[in-house]
Length: 378
Image 1 (cartoon, helix red, strand yellow):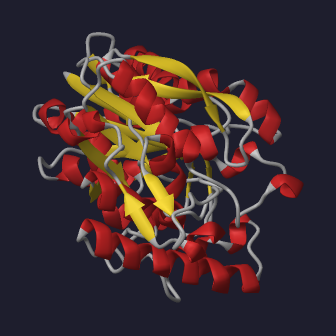
Image 2: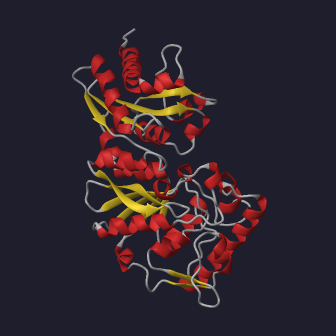
Image 3: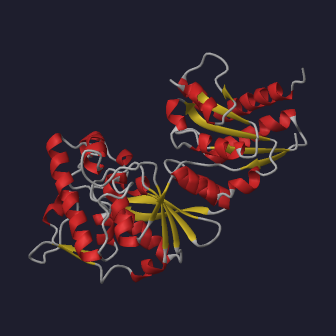
C-alpha cells in the first residue's frame, strides 16, 4: 500500500474532521508503516464545513461580535482560508437555531442581520471570495436582515424603514441598494446548499422549514405571503426573479437574498468543499480511500460527503472503506453508492458518552482492523 487518502467529516459533538483523519492515519500506519497518508477533512456544507476548509487550506478560524437571530450580541466564528482571498461564513454560527432555547425562538421576527455583519468583518479583512454554508438558521426573512446590516434600505409605502424579521416584509414596498456596501460588487459568493426548495409555496422556505423554527400554521401562511411580496419587490427594483430558483428557499429564504442581491451561485455543499480541498488531484494515484462520519444510515446517500468522496474515488477504480460511530437504518445503501465496506468504532458494549470521550483511540483501532482485513492474502 503506497498512498491512502483519509477524507472523513467531523463526528458531531465529538472530534473535527482533521482530528478524525489523524486518528485514522495512526491506524493505517500500524498496518502499513511506509504508506503515505494524505489527510483531507471534508464536509457537506453543514456543520463542520468551516473547520474542514480551514484545516485543509492551513487557514484560521476568526471571531467577530455580531447579533444573533433575536438581536443579542454574541461572538461568532468565520473562516479565513489559507489562500488569503476566501472567507467561509456558516450562517448557523451567527443566527443558528441551536443558539436559541425553545422559548427564545421567534421565527416571525428573527433576522439574518448577524450574517451581514460577518460579511462586513471579512470585507474589512480584505477577503473577496465567499463560501456560505446556509444550513441551521433560526430565520425566515429571505436575507433581509443581512441586507439591512450591509447598508441596504427596505422601506414601506411611506418611505419608513422596516423593522427586522420576516413578517415585516409584508409591508415592503421599495428596496434601495444605493447604500449597500460597494465592496460586494467585486466579490464572488458561492452558497453551499443541499436543498432545492423554491422561496414560496407548499415546498417553500416557510412551509418546509418554518415549523422546525417554531412557526405555527398561521405563521407559515403569513411568512409565506411576506416572502412572496419580498420576491415581487426584488423583481421590481433589482430586475431579478428569485422566487422559483431551486434553492431560493434555503435557510428561510436566505438563498434568494444571496442570489438576488449578490448574484450568488448555489452548489451542493459537498461538491464545493471537495473542489476547494482539491480532492480529485489527491485521488489520482491513491490505493485506498477512507471516509467517515458519526453515523452511516439512509441519509448518508443524499448529498453527504462520504458518498460524494466515494463516487469521485470510483472514477479511478479506487476501493473505499468507511468508519463510523454507529450504523442507522438503511446503512447498507451506502454500498450502492461507492463505499465498499464500513466499520463501526464501537468494539464492545459502551454508552454513547463513553464512545464520544474515547473517539480518537476507537477510530484508530477500527481503521487498523479494517486495513488488516484488506491486507489479508488468501
